[in-house]
Image (tube, rainbow, N blue to C red; front, top):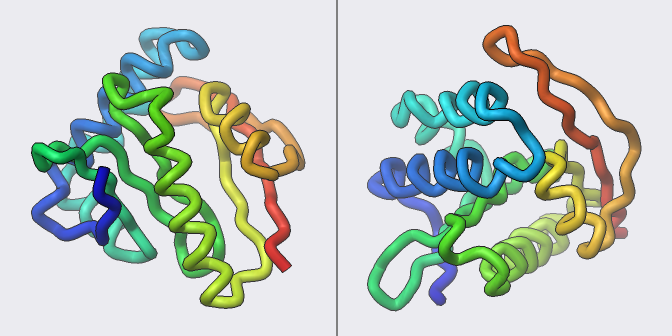
Length: 155
């Protein structure tokens, strides 16, 4: 697995990873309607590419050049994205990406990381030292989703 910087030409592959992660991996915790609405945020690939260009965005690529996962840490220390394609799940790919994002945040003297984690991602972030601050409900497209605001102090 190769970890490298995101490039604009990755937009379609990253959107596919996002949709698959939400629609397939999210099935254990979210309804079909919740997943459909959530996954729609990747439908506008140009807008997604603009969001991914705003921070330290990395992709994990397998030996065949397939994008297996991606993650982004914004300059504020917010982990905006960390998604893994279901077929690459439970293989340590997200951990590799997270460790790289965390190391870069430390290098940039970011004092803490934050994330708004899904039900699916909350255990991952807990294992990596995040503490839950609060749960919250957000509405997207008229559908309510629960997420968990979490923080990890780096310094």
